[in-house]
Length: 234
Image 1 (spheres, rainbow, N blue to C red):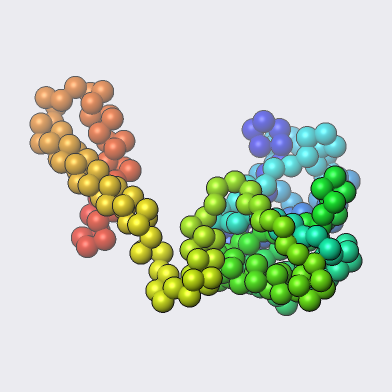
Image 2 (image 1 turned 90 degrees about the horizontal axis):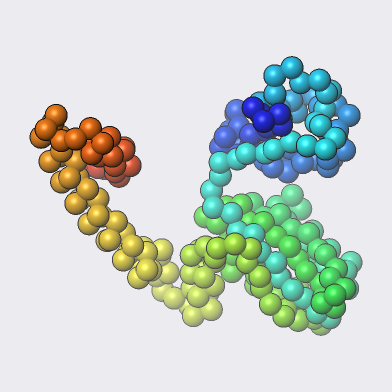
């Protein structure tokens, strides 16, 4: 906003929490160009804003705090665009499909394929593998095939774990049983223990420690994981 661009908050950042990005984007860019619709004033507006809506060149910024989101695309062959749109409509949350799933179908002439493009906003409420199996079932009914799955950005553990659990019929596919996750937690706990020793040693020495070191250690202390047993911050 200080740079001259209206800002909207969504997700856990909005007041009250829970406003979705889809709500802010409803009607597209044109909906906020001439004026801000009722109930859709920006949360942060630059001082002395001269426009009834967003700036025609600068637009607006949306900032959100939310759970991990899975952005992914599934590529199809042997499926017409209207058939792909029908599948996407069945899948998406607003159509009575999977909780937290947004989906749309796109034609990709350069690849001679169809794409179902999706955002899964709550990996705890909906297993990605369940969504994929639903797409696979419908595509096979039509006589088409799935040629690939593309994940945008980093691949969440929940995507791989739920897929493995479903395909392999794992009896206990709990996240805490992931070797990489347990190892990372172990390393983090050991590092935190050493960091606490450093913080306590510096605190004990007080002014005998150079100010630059004390500033760095205070910053370290603020980032230490809270002790769940005593609720004490080092």
